[in-house]
Length: 425
Image 1 (cartoon, rainbow, N blue to C red):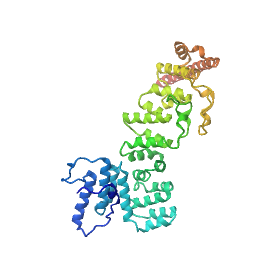
Image 2: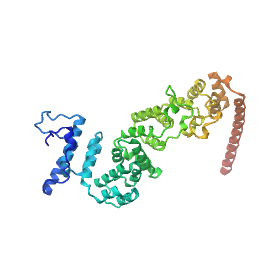
Image 3: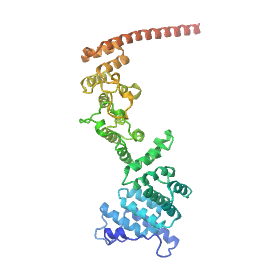
Image 4: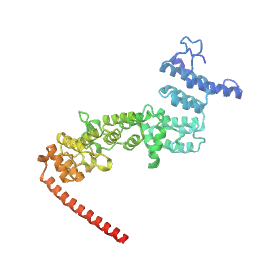
């Protein structure tokens, strides 16, 4: 294939050849179709006589050559294969995708569906598209493009019903200038499936795997609380900022839950920390075995409900208990903080009882290890002097409960023993 001698502007203005200039025999057309497809896939736009010696082109020049090639040989190209090629080989070259769509528009300029899109309302057009067969035709994609160009984001949500004929990668190309539109479509697509199928759907869409970071970054940047309300000047969590509502919180959660290698989890954790998405950051810290980091951030978030055994965030060793107690002592968060200044935060964020203080952590310690063991550890940490009468009274109650539980267990064991002996007799 000879290199084009036209400049960028001429390449852009070069007319499409959507129909063959002459009759081509089927066998020859099949071979030519294979050759043209391989040229695009392998980026072979240079002849042997080219002065560059066949070296790889700069990305911008490759895009220009690819666009010129598509315009020149559009009538030979397998349109489905071309679509896949652009998706995976030219994903960073929007002009190549635009050229492909422009060729499809030329091909369908007098189509009845094109006329309907120009003259009808959205519901009627969607009904018309639903009746078209097959949905996986590239022509179907150009009709969807025209719909988006006319109706904007409103047209995207009905596209969910056309999955997998229209893929998220196609919608991303459509919405390249408006990523928020793509995010709304992706969220709608995931929500359209039953809950037990959403993770598997999302996993199937993440090709290549690097898309996960792109989509996560997109989700934590749109319809979210302001960063100043979730992260303080030192980069630590603001009190109770984990209770904010995130517009795409469910999508973020699914992206984090999907299996990933260590490096991917680290990158996701960094994104969550940077933008203050603390629920995701805490869960990733646990997966990365950063327990102390997770416990430190829980203290900053100032919410005792996060020290929850069911979530795996409760201290597991005496050293971790000491660490949390000292963090609670040193943390500058005020225990009478009544919540963040945001209407989306639930009422459960208020109330001094839930704040992370030395006394509240000590009470949890006493419930987990027993009041006597807790008192010894608190003495070792030099914290018994900051505890109130309330702590002493609760510990007394815990001792009574422990004695009753031991007596009850002893009684049950004795009954079981008598029952077993009676069965043997």
